[in-house]
Length: 135
Image 1: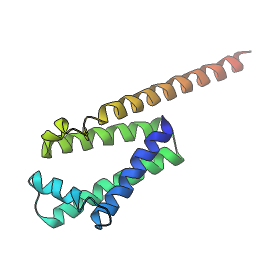
Image 2: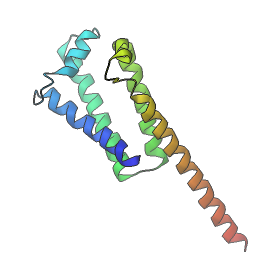
Image 3: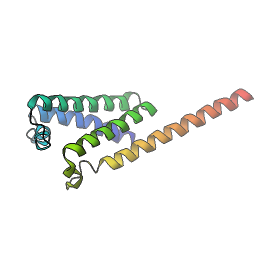
Image 4: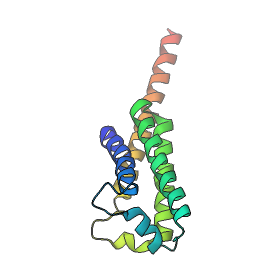
């Protein structure tokens, strides 16, 4: 689960960069989505695209290099924020046949599971350490 999340976040950053620079067959899909969502100023589009790209990159690197509660929590909150922005700009994406926003639900479930598993592991390790001190 963890590895797939790293791939999703880093892959999204890479694809966003390729699209922004016109190096993919998507032909500036990010800018088109923002235009369709009412943001036609190219400067704002660049700010939003680069903000999302950098957020994806940082979350992906955090998940890769520093897995744990803080990374999972940051990824979950960022995914919620990006889903909210996507919903505000393009609510129809919830009904898109490829499910670009709908896919965030299983991602949220995986992050929540990893967060809870990490919490349980830390609690068990703390309890085990406390038991060792009592003997």
